[in-house]
Every structure is written in C-alpha cells, then in structure tokens.
Length: 225
Image (cartoon, rainbow, N blue to C red):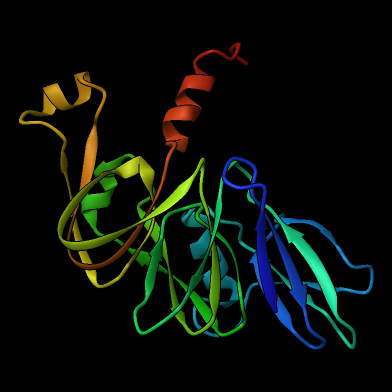
C-alpha cells in the first residue's frame, strides 16, 4: 500500500494505491473517489473497540458510529480520502506506544490498528473540547486529519497547547487541563481560555486552526432558525 498526500496543507487529500487483496478502514463518508472494482462494506468493526458498543462509543467521541472497509480484491486499486474540514492529513506509523486522537482527528487506518474510546477524566470535561478521545493501538498506519495545517512537536519535559489545537499525542505523555493565565477571569476575557499542559517524552500533533472557535464565529453570523 502506497500513500501520497496531495494539495497540502489547506486542502489535503490522500491518494492510496492498494495492492491486490489489501484492506483499508476509514471514517464513514471519507471516500472521495475510487477504482470501480473496489469492494466496500460498512462495519461496526470487530475486535477491540468494535461491535455495537464500540460504535456507540465512537459516536460519543464525535465520530461516526460506522466505519467503511475498502478491499482491493484480485487487482490493484486506488482510492482518494479527504477529511470533512479543510485542512491537512498526516500519516502516522504505529509503534510501541498507543496514540490518543482528538475528536474528528481520525481519518483512516490499516487493519492492524485497533480503535477504542478512552475517557480522559473530568479534566477534559472543562476543556471545551471532546470528553472522549479515541485511542489507536496495534500496528500499522493511521491517517490523522486536521483543521488547517498539522505539525509535530517532540516533547521532552513540559509543553503547553491550547485545547482546541490538539490533534493527537502519544500515550507516553501525561496531561492536565488548566487556565492559560494567572486567573480564570483573565484567561477567558483574554480569549485564551483553557490550555493542556503535557509532561513527559513523546510526540504531539497540533493543528493551526481551532474548529470549535471557527464554528462559534460562523454560528454567530448565521440567521436564527
């Protein structure tokens, strides 16, 4: 399987060339175009993070209850995938550590990757972002999607990120949610809100734009229903 990311970073689309008998799992609705002989099924995903309960948990995380499974069959095939929001796509190779993915940050993965839902504790209830985040484990490739550009930070010690700009992070990192300034009133009046303080060693992936802030900005300008 070969993955090429085109039109980065603002309108990224993933072109995936599949060898015969290969399989790809993707978020429902991510397919843009594909070879005519590609076999497509909708599934709740068996195994870890699968079944009806797994599907319901993904819904809580802001993801679709269902996943699409694409199989190339007896011949080579190609497929194009794109995220719902305009932005970048980043291929992440799973290794020894699990990957925690923020809501809407998952686009696709190879069959060896398991998806589950982790409750990140009451600290994320107050973050203004998703309370439930997906956890990817196993081996294989994960395609992460972002609103705007996506970039990697190698954390060694401590690092601070606005909660709305987090795409994913390796589970070797510990985190806590706190205010951006010295006071709660100042933090919100200043527009910074809440931040996530990471500690440890591992990779962190951030997006240049905040989808929540964008939604609030657009929503305030729409006529009432």
